[in-house]
Amino acid sequence: MDKRPPRLPARPPAPTVLTAPSPVEADSAEELVTAEPETPDLETSGHSGSQRGHLRLVDDIPGSNTDTSAAATSGHEDDAADGSTGRAWRQQRAASRAERVRQLWAFFEGANPYTNFWLVLGSAIALSVIGLTFVLSSTSVTGDGDPFTIVARQAMWAGIGVLGMIFMMYVPTRWMGGIGWAMMLLSGVLLSLVAFTPLGSDGGGSTNWLQIGPVRGQPSELAKLALVLWGAAVLAKKGRLVEQFTHWVVPFVAPGALAVLVLVLAGGDLGTSLIIITVAAALLFAAGVSLRYFIAAGALAVVAVGLLMWMTPYRMMRVYAWLGMNCDHSLDPCHQTEMGYYALASGGFWGVGLGQSRQKWDYIPEVHNDFIFTIIGEELGLLGTLTVLGLFAALSIGIFRVAFGTDDQFTRLVCIGIIAWLSGQAFINIGMVIGLLPVVGVPLPFISYGGSALTITLLAVGVVLNFARRQRLQARAPKRRRRGTAKRSTLAPR
Image 1 (cartoon, helix red, strand yellow):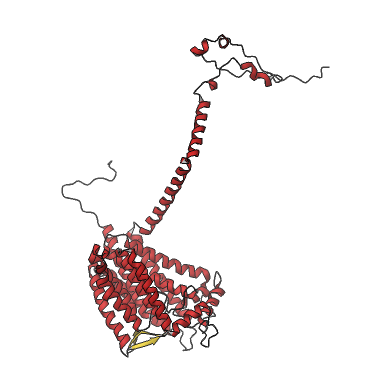
Image 2: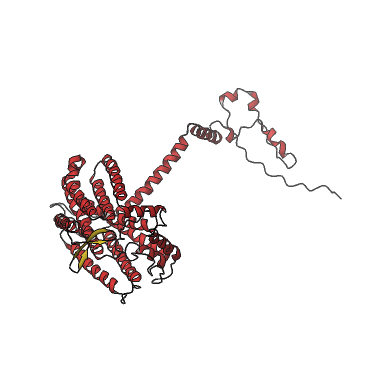
């Protein structure tokens, strides 16, 4: 019996393509001899390559795919050698980043005037409702017997503010400049009464309240809106002349903004003074004033604020408390900030529940005013505080989109000034609550207790809604065609 392993069937020979010899190769007798390819089997397949020495295959032709791939490889090596491939990749990445930035900027600018109107109105109303809710929560534990006394007063001022907002929304836009001039004169008179007459009332270490019979308010809140409207009217009227030093100084800085600042400082209200400086700087920047002036003015403002704080003992006590240097003082200046930390820490992520705050039981001074954000953090937790921050961001984005939805310089300046006012005041209030800034006594817009502050803030929102409403009407109105020109279909080829 044959015990040899069975032979496998021979594989068919691979087709070999013969090419015609070149004239140079025809001169050689060795290349004219061709041999019949033998069928390779499993035992001799390793030597089959040596039996194809006189054959020229397609892939051996000069200029074939092998040469092309080699040339491409050498080309890539040359590109890698001179760095062109890396430069192209970096340029592509830079173009991709620039495209994402353009898309984000297009979202902020906003091309839909209908969305802008409801974004501003919805966020403002939501913040006001949250404010009334937490004024009720933080003042319901007072010992006067009626937990609804303070919130009812705040709700009355909120109703007046909503009526004022509706009025400002339907006032003709061309009247806004004149309203700014009237508000500027009125706020100057009221601030003078606060600073230089017995009608001024103390509150929080400064004389910034005006008491006329049963009515008590802060004229400095009216001065903020007046400065925005009046300053925007003046700077828009000057146009390109604001690039010159004398034109942006007179009359906006002096005597306008400087007079308001001096009257507010005469009452000792440093927090409102910082807001006035922020609004004035934002208006000048949006109007096109050169940046070199901001460097000098910023350095001067920092020095002036430092001197004011150093010259006032109770302000320096707040700075030392912020730095943790005099917490053992008899007046316990660190108590308010520390209790605020405890409230925020005990809230966690979800909070202890609406109305269930423990720190509002006389542990935190001014809990319904400057430190109301701590009660939001305790009762609604981190989620509630992020919701409030998101609403402020939505309001700022909506106002920003209204500003860039028009070519009117006055509209843009008013919107930028209101953004600087509301967002800057919210940043200072939240910053002092979380320990980022010393306590300066600035309320949180829409949320802190204060009738005059809430009313004037809603009036400012009404001004923005006036501009947004006008943009909606312009977008809704059909564009007029020239006489004698036929209407072109949008589906017709261009």
